[in-house]
Image 1 (tube, rainbow, N blue to C red):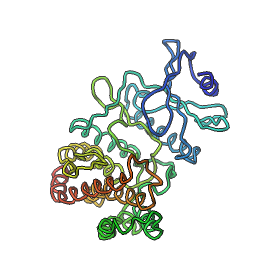
Image 2 (cartoon, rainbow, N blue to C red):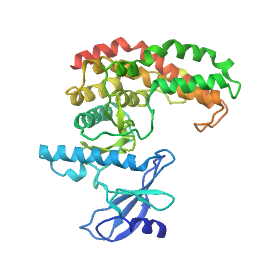
Image 3 (cartoon, rainbow, N blue to C red):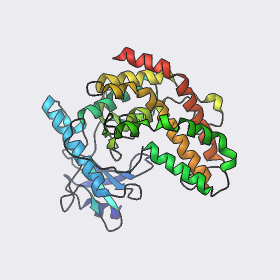
Image 4 (cartoon, helix red, strand yellow):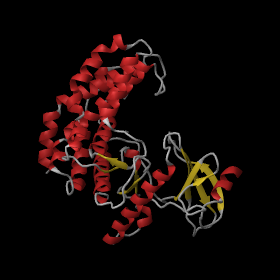
Amino acid sequence: MQDLLSIISHFRLEGTVQSVDPLGSGLINDTYKVTTAEPSAPDYVLQRINHAIFQDVDLLQGNIEAVTRHIRRKLEARGEQDIDRKVLRFLPAEGGKTYWHDGRNYWRMMVFIPRAKTYETVNPQYSYCAGKAFGEFQAMLADLPDPLGETIPDFHNMEFRLRQLREAVAADAAGRVGEVQYFLDEIERRAPEMCKAERLHREGRLPKRVCHCDTKVNNMMFDEDGTVLCVIDLDTVMPSFVFSDYGDFLRTAANTGKEDDPDLDRVSFNMDIFRAFTRGYLESAKQFLLPIEVENLPYAAALFPYMQCVRFLADYINGDTYYKIQYPDHNLVRTRAQFKLLQSVEDKAGEMRAFIAGCL
């Protein structure tokens, strides 16, 4: 704890630190709750930023500052109450930046939001809330004046992910290409359609927006009455297509099986989750979405299982160098499960289009 107190001393916080305890179960950053002794002082959240993943911390925090500043201004202009519980607030450190570098690690502190909770449950109710919250998040940032950088370059770039797969096939480092030819053929057959977002962008028809790029139910804070307070976990906020926030949520939330389910009979696309999330998303996002963005939402639902299938298969061919595996064929099992989900999404594309049309 003494080391953490030393880190905390470099930030401008109110009150006296009473305790520092681990918080949450995040897989990327180490997170701690800093409790203060005085009832009038807020508590805080201390995080060690994983700079192996987010290599440009200055860009990362610059993005987050621009986004939270803009959202705060929007909330103030609306006359919202309790704004400090509806947008994250980061503390300045010595030197004026919102992070501190101790010579080895990067740290940041934000004000802890009291009387708020997150949920892990994925059901139609919370999926509707997620759709509405992430749509509202995009809508509030549609006129953000500050240019943002990519915190993880090419994160959701389908052309880039296919290049990685093709390089893996050419190298065939683990001698596995022969056994996965079926999936390679199916992926290549779909490649032109699945790369159309990048193509439409080059043609000037599809804009990049400010997106969250990690849309999960547990990346929202709920108030005690069940209303959404704010979207959290802003490390991946960056320019992307709206498909990122829409398709990425459905890939995980609408899968009736597990991401690595060995029983493919359990894997399908849950239309109840799709309908709930889409209804919420369009309620808040249709105010700024272009017709080309709306008409391609079913494409977005297919794009993300396809993209993850490509990534798992590339890693399997490379000899399992990126994703952690529990057994030798784990990445191949993941590939099969994501491909089955993709096929289920494709089977329901007409139904999705009809539902979206009815929401407008």
